Each structure stands twice: as structure tokens, then as C-alpha cells.
Length: 213
Length: 213
Image (cartoon, rainbow over all chains, first blue to last red; front, side, top):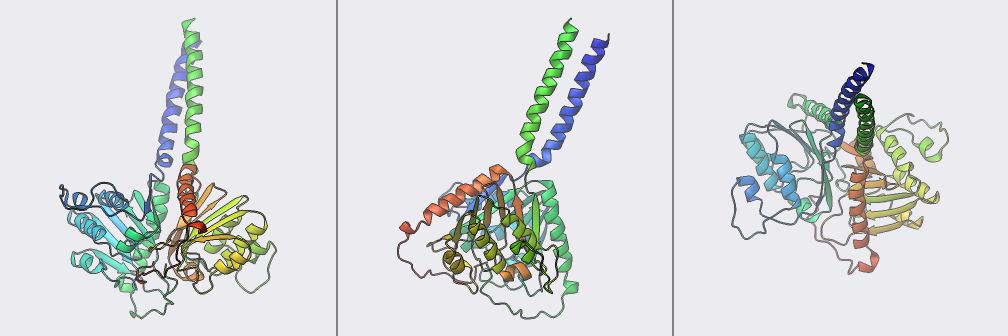
């Protein structure tokens, strides 16, 4: 009789510990699911952005920018952006597309780099997207995005065509919820800090201009 | 009799699966051990760099720069640096210190930002540290370090005093070996690519200068 009890008991313990371990493994195993290095080769991104095949003469197929676009376009509920510089027309189009799909977009940028050539900030604001900027003496130099409060996209890459096409850059895609939460908390802090009700005089910052990498 | 066999069998299976799961968990659980946000408060870093207490009037205690220095100074065998801009005197001193301790230092920088004000590249080269730079039209815009081929330090932060003290920045410290290996591979590729034997004419790059964040 005690052998039956032992066998059943061991079986139950086995199942319980197995379940517990599998549950525990999930968050950690999802970490750093992708690293994207730049520069990106120039490819057609119409299929990703318009959702239909394109016959233009640009090369078709995978590229670093394409992989980044796929990650951004995966947003279904929210996209929190904290970007030093944002002038890439493809990434701008992706963000407007998400906005039209009902994804809640929040965008934080650096005040001095809002007006760089080809900046996407004007078009994004016109499309109805909330944009907030710093009013500090230093730069808002982050370059991260949080998709659906679950995926962190971060690295050295500014969302500009020059960076995408000519610079050596890295972008990490991280699905570790603990790490995502740390960046979410930082985002919420900055978002509140840059609330327009807190804006004082929109001063010309005195910055050296040379150390702005 | 079959009940004994069943009990023993289940026990053995339980142990085998448990061991396998625990072994599998290890690499993933070591990921993203630290996130450091900047700007850093200004504190005395003498204790970290000179290894002796300091009585200077600067505040003592923890800071973002202090935490970064601790991570860099942990190197025992090698330090591979891939930095767009490097002018922080404290980080420069840490790298020279490691070099004198026999740690193998390799430093890759951007050619255009080598000469920024307060650049550490001259002093580091004089100390005997190997420095290589790009000769591309784009920027070498990475900002990462690999300690002992085991720990990756990466993010938005250039190693400059302005960035450290005034910018909003992030630095991730990652101990996931798979991820470290991806960056190591990229480093080796860049290191070989920037081998001085491959240098051609040291041309004046035509860069716009505005999108250099």
C-alpha cells in the first residue's frame, strides 16, 4: 500500500515542481530576443508599411530597418517613444499608421533636435500624436521605444535616415518584463516631468553643440 | 513489484528533468543585471580610482558614474571598447589603471570625434593603449564596452562629462553570454575592419554635422 502512496506522491510532486519551474523560466528566457546592427542596406519597405507587394526598383528583402519596422509595427495597444532625434520618414509613417489603428502613442523628444532637417515631429503632431519635449540644459538623449508595455527597443540608434543608412549602430529588442518595467517607470517619470503645464520660458539652451552624440 | 519499479522510475525521471531544467535556466536568468540612468549627480570618485578614502569637499556616496566605474574597473583580463566619443577624465583614468594592471584594452572610436575637446584618445594612446578608428563616411556611433568577454555595457551614453552630468541617458549592464557573444563578434569584425593596414587616405568626411546624436 505505502508503495502506491509513494508512487502517487512522487508523481504529484514531479508535476508541481515541473509546473513551477516552467512558470519561473518564462520571463527570463524571453530576454534579448534580437540584436539589430546598422547601417542598414536600403530596401523597399512598402510591403511592411502599405501591406501590399511593391514593384519598385529598390531591392526587396530583409534589412536592419525592415526588422526594426516589424518590431515597431507589432504594437497593438501602446507605443511609448523616448527619442533624441526622429527624422526617418519610414519610422514616422509607421508611427502614424499605428496611431490611425488606435494604438496609444506617446512621444518624448529633445527640444533642440525637434527642428532638425526632415524632423517627423511636425507631421506627427499634425496627425494628432502627443509629443512632449525637455526643457533642461542637457539633452534628452535616450533612444528607446516600449511596445505594448512588453517589449523594449533600445540602443545607440537615433531614428534618422543618416544613422540608419550610414552609421554603425546597435538596437536591442528585449522582452524581459522586469527590464521593460524599469524603462517604463523612467518613461512615466519623464512624461510627467515634461508635461506642458510645467513648461516655463522656452529658453534657448546654451549647449556646446559638439558633444551631442 | 511493478509499483516499486514505478516509484523508482518516477523518482529518477523527476531528478533528470529537474536537473535539465535548472541547467537550462542558468544562462537566461543572468541577463540584464543592472540599468543605470543618467544624468549622474557629481560625487567624488577618488575612492574608486585611487583605492583610498578621500576628504575632498565633493559629496561622497553612490552615483550613476560611480556605478559605471565599478562595472568597468571589474575587468581582470580584457576590456573591449567601442565608443563614439570618449572625453570623461574619470573613465579615461579607469581605463589607464586597468591597462597598467595588465588588462588587455582595445579601443575603437569615431575618427571625427577623436579630437573633441578633452578627448581621452591622446592620453590613452600615450599610455600605450591600442586605439583604432573608422574611415567610413558614417559615424562609428556604438557606445558599448565588453568586460572580460562576459559582461556587456551598452546604451545611449557617450563617455563624455556633458553626457554623464547633464543628459538623460541609459546604460544596460548585461551578463547573458549569448548576447555578449553577439556584441563580441561585432567588435572583432570592426576591430579587423579598422586595422591600420587597411587605412587608405585619411579623408575629410563629408557629414552633415547636424544628425550626429
